[in-house]
Image 1 (cartoon, helix red, strand yellow):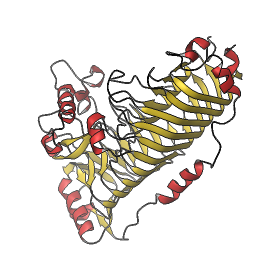
Image 2: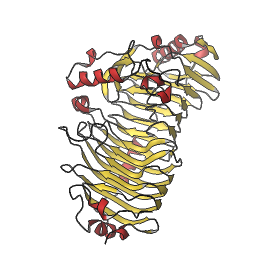
Image 3: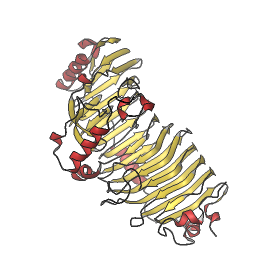
Image 4: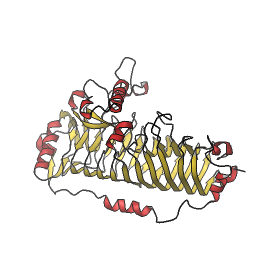
Length: 474
């Protein structure tokens, strides 16, 4: 078994750390003194509150819905939500049963409450999904409506202990990924041509109104997307079989995701992706996904710079992560910047989870990631790395917009088994800066770490394979 932090890997490309720097880092104190950053996390927690709704219920069955799994309830949902909003708000209640519907559009002051024993099942007929203003992998366009959508609303919620079933699978939505793993066959339609066109339109600055997809195109919709909304609550529900990203608030403020269970293993099936949002709390939830469990974003490339809206003041706490690519991920769509991210008291339990804290960037995205804090995390097994910072993701180097990544602080992380403790690759002309690990323990690391072009790596009380972290450097 290779020892961690070998000098060959620690020095990296372009002399990332001076000789002996890692040994010094292993015995040095904290990178900086000052106020406790977790007080800011507590402030975010107090500031993000669940919206309140009038104590008035609007059962969808009163508007013609039938929970037989066959009757089309689209009109009943629209009528119930419309009446609720028009009369001052309240709860639109979905009683026990299975309700088949097209996309649902939420309105201000409406709580869509999915009762225990109730399932909302979304049809896969493309003609039922009108075009709306949306973001697709970080680029604004008009595309198929998300399954649950709101634009410019306030005080909205999806609550209850029932289930949302997107009915995606190898027979619907997922084959558009263009992978035989998800039901695609040669000659079938897939998304790559449309995705290339959308990226080209954005790079050329074509107005959003002229970036029209939807019918006749193959860009999958997200599941729940509040767009430019304020005071949003997603609570209690179980989400299954999403076409793509599951919970995707965009350009929204004060978003609370609480006691949610996500189980969806399709392509690009991220669990929760706050994008260009301010004040977000994700708490007491479980993620079992086909992609990143949580991925914090802020727009992609030229379009992300055009919108120029960061994600900031994000708190993730008391969550469990099972399958997925990254537990807590930032990027790769982060051209508007990401800052003030806090993650604490997490459990990661699956051998099919790649990384604990994963940061993805490149020289097309640009933007920044700074002031990221993680503490008190228990991990059973990872297939890649505890901390991964990758500037070579997707387009990689050689483009005009180098990212700025620094101020990444991990404390109280315990990992049973991982390939790498650290997998961090900056550019020779653009270093990762100010990374600290404090009071961390890695029982088994099977490969020497990759640390390239990193300045200010500080390890304090870090044990790897039963030895202090600096033991491999002489």
